[in-house]
Image (cartoon, rainbow, N blue to C red):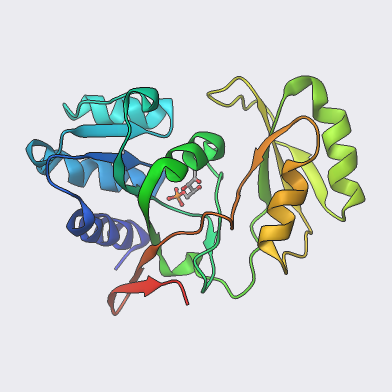
Length: 220
Ligand SMILES: O=C(CO)[C@H](O)[C@H](O)COP(=O)(O)O
């Protein structure tokens, strides 16, 4: 199977986690796009969706799926999204598409986080993928100096502005041995909106597409 076929396979498998008549939280990225396309076929079974980015909102609406603003919704039984990396305890690095803050907010409201990924995303230790950090523009210099002080190499994502009007810094070279501690530490830097570590809120289930089929991983 090609990587695209693997993404479609996990996207299809995620449909089994939806709750009929309820709202589903929807992530951002190429794997999430496959999920949105699958969702189109069963859209009459759900009440609608909450989107984690404007790109996702447009794709959902293009399929005729009702999109609710998060602040009008109390309950999201399931959030489905991809990841840039995921480890055996289902902690993740996310934000390759720059939507990390809204993804983290929707995930925080959701009762269950179903991560959909192809096998290349499963890692032993997080951090090979540069960690995205969303930053308030006026703080960019300060935040980059602080990130360098904790051992990272920050690089501004050129020409990119988030849906929230902020900047993204991609940080390489971090030794992510304690993801929860690092998530907290980076979020404490003044000017950081949030970072792409999903350690305090890991996935509950990971559907991993491999050449042998879709595997279901639960946190150990
Ligand atoms: O966090 C994300 C976007 O902000 C995505 O979930 C992550 O980048 C994975 O994307 P893809 O499915 O295209 O590999």
